[in-house]
Amino acid sequence: MLSGRDDATCQQLLDRVGLQGKQFITDDWPGYHRLIPAAQLTTGKHLTFPIEQDNSNIRHVLARFRRRTKVVSKTEERVDLSLRLYHHLHDHPAAFAALSATFLSIFG
Image 1 (tube, helix red, strand yellow):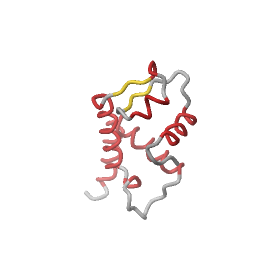
Image 2 (tube, rainbow, N blue to C red; image 1 turned 45 degrees about the vertical axis):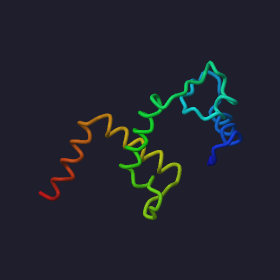
Image 3 (cartoon, rainbow, N blue to C red; image 1 turned 90 degrees about the vertical axis):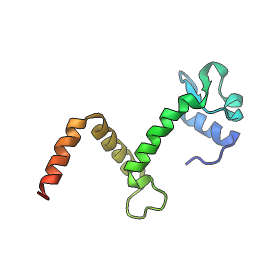
Image 4 (tube, rainbow, N blue to C red; image 1 turned 90 degrees about the horizontal axis):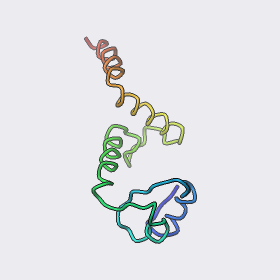
């Protein structure tokens, strides 16, 4: 797990994802400019806002990303499966409608 906002942490992330063939969109933290080649780096809040908005929506929907939760597993596998389910239902509204209709019929 990564933490902190320093050059060492940024370098850990870059070692994990690699630089080859990647384009990075970041805020204007100076560390990015020191570690990522200028040709691969785009900075600005106007580009990071939609990403942060999507992250916020996911955290809102998935309780396992709330800080004080004690009722769900935070294992990598469960987080991965939850994100896959969220994106499947979000990207396929008809699938969500069918499942929600089935669920709601229990109470009808």
